[in-house]
Length: 261
Length: 83
Ligand SMILES: [Fe+2]
Ligand SMILES: [Fe+2]
Image: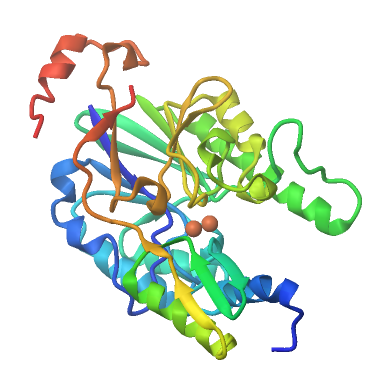
């Protein structure tokens, strides 16, 4: 079993009370891996991301992150990324990473993603250059996500986004802003390549649970949605979850995860 | 502020997004007869206080009613077996 802790939209600010620090010490007992779904800062400042990086430097588990729109606000996203990487965090943008956990492999493909809207109501890269740039950006990131997912050869594959790939996890947000909250192109990329689980943030007033059109589970882990420092999701818990034929019997997998504390 | 009353709430919302003390995109702002009502989710009590501060600077003659709620951020009780 793989235990994935995930949260997005921590929105750290310089000198702010941080959300993660009080629970970081105990986190390795709860999870094998921490995923951060973007909007790690309030305004994308290196002073802001340094507060989080200092916390994560002490984390005794692998941390994988994507950036969010707030992390681009100061046009210093490369510096934000570097500060995180210096603290040992893997930052993904159209890239993938594979981790070995408890003898099994987990692949994570990540992108910030972008908006555009959903099926039947998506913006088109037609007309003004600004409109072409807007939708073109989403298309480019969705293509790279699909390639990154396809490149993974792992027991479990996870897609990590900031923007939402589906509408269901936006419920609670105003319909008028859906095109700024995500794009179906991201879901299409994930459904084409296949994945076991998808995380996103960005929709602070949305809903936690949904599925892509092909049925892949999606979790909106924006901190105001999950209302915890993080949530933990497990893969490989059910016998049917063994995606690739394994020598281990499902029962053996279950007994291996005996602690229910 | 030389804004028509119809546009005052949007003006405040804009300022709350761009003021680095707050930088919140999801706040609700209503203005009714000398009162500014602020709502939505915020991460920390500090940000909640800064929202009041920014609104007060913008509209010193209005009563600021800050009804934003601080989202809890404790550890989860259990985990969700997704598959
Ligand atoms: Fe956010
Ligand atoms: Fe965001």
